[in-house]
Image (cartoon, rainbow, N blue to C red; front, side, top):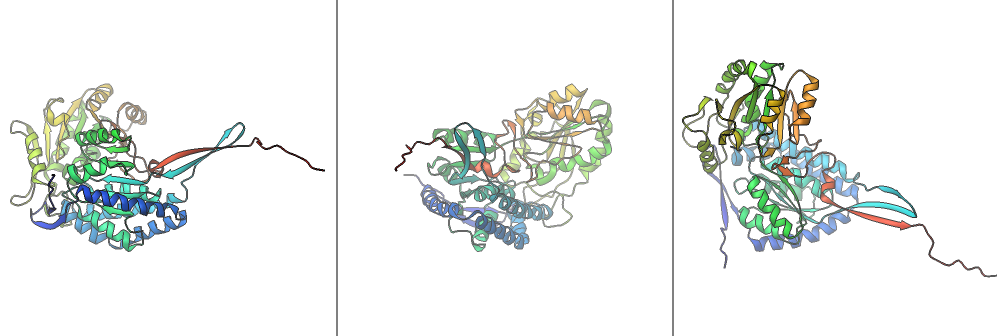
Length: 465
């Protein structure tokens, strides 16, 4: 007989203090949750689109009214700096509002065919499982939840063990907003217990997973056994390409927070800074004071730019990559309780070294020189990942050429922006499968049904008289 942990402690990563104890979901709990969700989904899908949209907009308003409360929860459980946490709560609100706008526009097509009329109908999948990560627990939970609900589905959200608090509060706010009971349920617990039960349950039509490539592959294999739909947003090792013709001052000023946001725990972090050799030394001279001056500390202090790592496990992982023999530019970090690591930029390193090729997932980047455009593209693509990246140049033609040549799903020119809820997001290669967000987000949670209506009469016309 299997035995399971009955509860999880949630730690504040800035202090290592226990801030909550949360019940752990068992496979039996998942069984009950799926059955309840299936009933709620049938009723939800039967509502008029305008009514579903109205309830989702009300949910968005309720989230906005509790934005500061949600932000403070994010600070306490994830160590995010308060400014970022407020943005994340606002982003969850915006995602709900944006998805609500799509409910009444989720339409099929009429396709010209001979012999009749052909139409397509977009129908909800049923029950959707969303497995959210610990690095951006609130917004990424909303990435899957908002469009899935808008498309007429029920959602079972499995948050990371370390960050369940904002997810649980969002579920409470959904009920307060009038969403049907059991339509949106949160199942906290271990990934290999609650998450696995969700993935393997035949009543769950789709899994949306954000996390490591290793776990994503395992989930994809388990979904294959049920021919279950899956969207995966996985790892990254994104390039920040700086050409000699770029505004070098602007590129150097923007570089630190392109990989230090959320203490580097970001799949889109620009952790491989590729600089054309002719401006390499100048770029490093400009970058150094920017790294050394980053304010690392109390996430609730408005002046803080970077908080702690999420856990002791993550801290040890990051430390294992930054060995004493590496030449590096280092910032500072608090000592004492908390999972702190200083901003670090490693130079003079082999592009094939683990720190340059693997996802560290911490406040660590490498700077690598390149010779010309072809060399920059070669280095940018010399990784198994392809999630995001930046290109700094004043040459529009070069920006277009390099954008086409770099194998990544989300690129920005003279900017480090990766994610907007208006536009599609997803990765190439081992950075994931499928797309989230954008104008087609709702369609990803539907089945397309094709209906042909013949206009050829099959009856025999008889005339009396």
